[in-house]
Length: 264
Ligand SMILES: Nc1ncnc2c1ncn2[C@@H]1O[C@H](COP(=O)(O)OP(=O)(O)OP(=O)(O)O)[C@@H](O)[C@H]1O
Ligand SMILES: [Mg+2]
Image 1 (cartoon, helix red, strand yellow):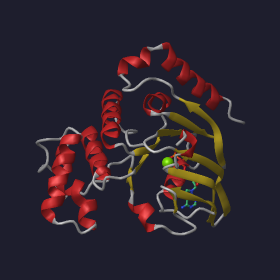
Image 2 (cartoon, protein in one colour):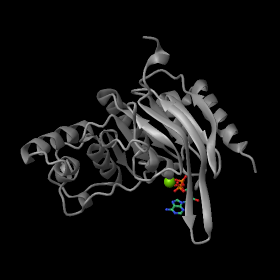
Image 3 (cartoon, rainbow, N blue to C red):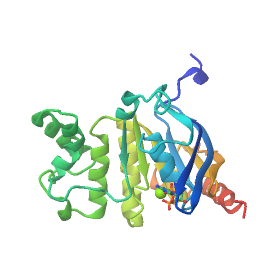
C-alpha cells in the first residue's frame, strides 16, 4: 500500500463556523481543510480569537460546524453522527480541570467510571497512568497538594485513560513556567511514542509548536483559514539541545515570518 493510500486518522473537510450573537452573526472560521495521518503530531498556531478552540470543539463533537464535516478513522462525526468516532478521542485543556474532592487516581479514572468500568480495573489503569506521567506516589493525593505542572500531568493522564486514538490538546501547558514546560514537552513526546496516539496541539508558542510537531499549521486571523503549513523534518526523539541548532531556529524563524505576514 502506498503512503497516500493510508486512510487519514482525522479529516477536517471544508469546515466553517458562524456564531449567532445578539449583535449579529460572528464568522469565526471561514473554511479549514486538512488531513492528519495516524500517529502524526500536528501543532496549530494562530492569533487570539481566530477560532482555534472552536476548531478543536468541532473536531471533538462539542460544537456543530456551520459548514463541512469531520471524520475520525473514516467515520464522519457531523453528517452521519458517529458516536463511535467521538468515543475514540480525548481532550485536555489549558486549566487542568480536576475535581478537588477526588484523589489523583480517582480524577484519572473518571472517564472510565463514566464508561461503567469496574472499580478495580479503572484504579489499576489509573495507577499505570500515574507511572506513565511520572506521578508515582501521588495516587492518593488531592489536586491542591500538587504543583501546576503536576496537575497538567494528571490532566494528560486522565485524557489517556480511554486509550484515545486522537488526543486534542488546547494550550495544555500555557500556564506553566518555561522550565516546567520544556519538561512537559519531553514527557508528551515520550507518551506519544508509547501510546501511538494521533495528536492535535493548539499552542501560542512557536518554539513549542516546532519542537513537538511533525507539521505546524498556521491559521490566519478571524475568520480563519489555513494560512500556511510547515513540515518539521527534525529527527526524533527531539531534545532540548536541538533547540540550539540552526535547523530548529530556521524553522521557528520561517513560522514567525509567516505570522508577521498576516494581512493587516
Ligand atoms: N459560543 C460563542 N458564541 C459567540 N461567539 C463565539 C462563541 N465561541 C467563540 N466565539 C467567537 O469566535 C471567535 C473564535 O473564538 P475561539 O475561542 O475559537 O478563538 P481562539 O483562537 O481559541 O482564541 P484564543 O487564542 O484566545 O484561545 C471569537 O471571535 C469568539 O468571540
Ligand atoms: Mg482558545
